[in-house]
Image (cartoon, rainbow over all chains, first blue to last red; front, side):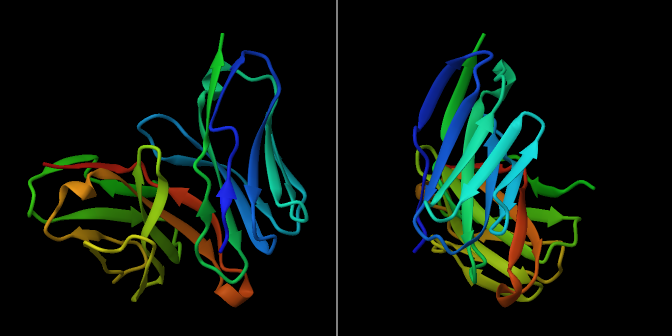
Length: 112
Length: 118
């Protein structure tokens, strides 16, 4: 059974820092991995989707990488801003399954 | 495209009452999902559907029912509401192929329904 872990659970950084959020998964036979952002009281917003054949995806200041052999994905946020404050979740879907497995998220605060 | 829409946004129920949470997507997605999210507990899958007329149980289906008569709609029915069903409910959808051909792709979420059972 796929298990997804996100460490740390919470992170507070000053504005302008480059930061890395971690997502670990136990089953390397994943088909894709998706990163989401959730603002308080809101739904999940898709940030990036990485297919198993890809090593990374980029969108603006965000870059997500995937290393299946080590069971890790990282979300890199460049030049963080207070508006980046949110909870970031990752979800890994194993090949042959219809259901992604979610981590519990990392709560990020970027202070001015 | 409106994406995934959910109604109502908020609802308070009394114990024993029933209600239906509505979910509609306009992206012609074949996969649809219902999750509940409790503080500190992460997302838990209630039911999912791989296409019209096909539904299956997720991790926490007890106390809930679903139907999928059209591609667009995936309502979640709560019968005999209990305080343990107080939660935020999210509907999501994906486009994709069958499991052997890769399965669902990027997942999109609705804004959620905040339900309180008193």
